[in-house]
Image (tube, rainbow, N blue to C red; front, side, top):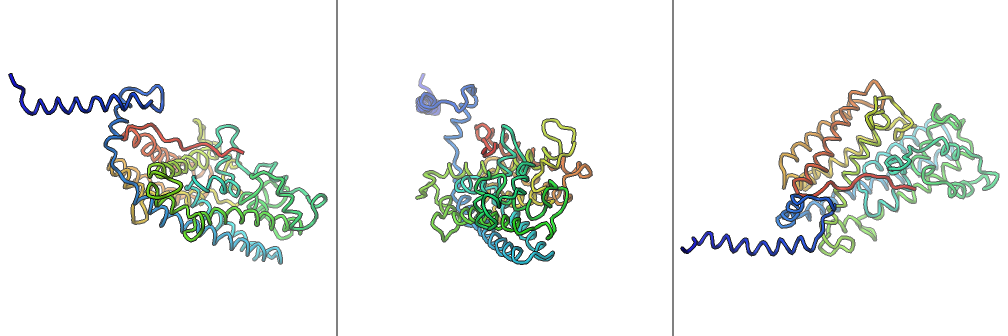
Length: 405
């Protein structure tokens, strides 16, 4: 008996798809050798039907979201140089306060670009803010400045290098990145020498030797911060934002848009991991099943009391990236495949913003808010790095780990 037309067509479709399926799997090996047949099928279907085009999102990041943040870093760097020069010429209580406020504006600017952990970031950022990379190392993590770093910054270098800014510049050239950049400037500008964070700085502590050291540290910081900012300058030579915006469409850095999307997405996940693991769980004593014994020596920007403000600034840039600042954001990518996961991520962001604004320091008195922040960050990471990849048929995106030395 002659088969119905629909069955003949279905059999033809199967005969067409089977060779394609066989060729795909015979030419591609799974990312993980132990991947199941189900994950292979999911990956195959994802590659067949993944139609999301990230071009508008990448253009928004490269041309609208990131450049103003890097421009602000450059602006704040220039102000720090100016305030440092003023302080060196006349140390008064007012000038010291102005310099400290300029430093706070610089760390805020740095925390807002910390999320862009790719491209020129890898070359320059660790040289002026070593804390995130050191704190997130898988082997021997650190929370600079250590006591040894402080000793190096308190050392009288003049016998070998001379009592001048040039001598101080030569001296800091012998130090590693943990004892330079924003971390070192924070120590010299906020903390009395030899007190290891116990006593606040006063003008009486800022000898000519220490002021020369501060000037050298500022110049070193400005060189690296400006290099990073210039790499993202839309009118500059590198124009890294434009490389993102034109990914797969003429970009010399990204031959296809998926690579650029992966960089941005991985940077965002890394930021969330650093916030949760390095900036909250470790100093609050909550990592690896900890019982909540506070250890402020593990806290970022502890010498200026700025740890929680750093987290708020980290979240601000993640929020801008996710929501798109009124244009296309990561939210659109997530919602394209799973509206429910996008709704959950947005809820986590809103709640986290509220909780982080409800406390100002890492302390036992704020443990409830700290624990809630950790839980919200954990859920965000679960949504973006576990459940969303499962929807796509992929494994989790690699996002954590330090820069090393």
